[in-house]
Length: 407
Image (cartoon, rainbow, N blue to C red):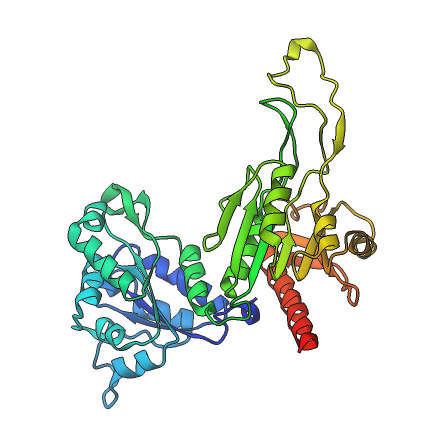
C-alpha cells in the first residue's frame, strides 16, 4: 500500500503538544509510517508528560526532539523545518494554536513551525470552552487564512470526564487530511473521477424494499484513494452505508433510477467512473402507496429489471475509463470478469467473490481479481485499501496510455 500513497517517501514533521490526546499521536505515527512516510516527531515539553520521546523514537526509528539545543553545533529548528515536506500538529492545544497564529517561537516546535515553508495540517484538541472561546476561534481563522488545513475537533469524551466538542479527530481522519495535502500534484491531480458506493433500495411499499448487503466500504476505499492521489472526486452513495470518507463531493441516492441519473450526469467528461456500488438488478414493478398489511397475506411482487448503468456508460463512453464490479459467489472469477467486460463495454472489471467467510460485503478484505482485455491475474486476498490502490494504478496507466496515443 505504501508505494501507492502520496505519502510514500515524503518527510512528515509531526508536532505533538501537551494534552491527554497525545497518546493518539502514537497511532497517527504508525499510520503515517505504514503509508511510507518518513516521520520526524518534535514534542513540546508538556507533551512528554503524557508520552515519552522514546516511544516515538521506537515507532519512527528516529530520535524525537524536544529541546532547541539538543544538537549543539546545528541550528536544529532550521534543519528540521527545511527537511519537511508536510508539517502536522496533532494534538494542537489552544496554547500552541495561539503561538502559531501570533508568531511566537519560544520552544523547538514553535520555532520549527515558524520556519517551515511546506503545507501545514493542524488537528486541535482541547475542552469545549477553550475551543469556542473568541480568541481560539480567531486564531484558527488566522491559520486557515494562511493556508493551514484544520482537522476537527469532534464531539466526544474529553479529559476530566467531560463530554463535548473539542476531542481530537481520529488518527485515520488526520491521516486522510495529510494524504490530501501531500497529493497536491499527485498522479491523479487535475483528474475528475466518479465513484459509486453502497446498495440501492427498490421500494415495495413505504416500509419494505428489495436490496442487498452492500455497506459501501469498497466504494469508499476507492473514493478515499482517489482523493489521496489528488483527484476531484464525485462520490455517489446509496442508502444504509457506513460513514463515507471526507474530501469528495457527496451525492446521496436511494434507487437504481436515482443512481443512473446521478451517474450519467456526473460522468459527462469525467476521466474515470468506478462503479463499485451494488446496484439492485431488479425492482418491484408496482410500488404500493401504503404499507402492505401482514393480515392480507404475502403480496404478489413482480420484479422487473433496473437500468443497466454500467452498460450505458460503456456504450456511450461518457468517461474516458469505465470500471465495473462483479459480485460472485464462486466459480471461475476470471471467466465471469471476461464475460462482463465484453458485455458491458468496460475497460476493467473487478470480480469480487462475496460468498467467502470474512470477505466481501461489510468486511475489510476481499477475494478478488481485476480483469482487462490484456490481463487477468489469479484471484487473491486483498484489503479494500490495497484493492482500491491497484484499481487506481490500472486506471492511471490507461489514462496515461490514451494521452500518449493522442500526442
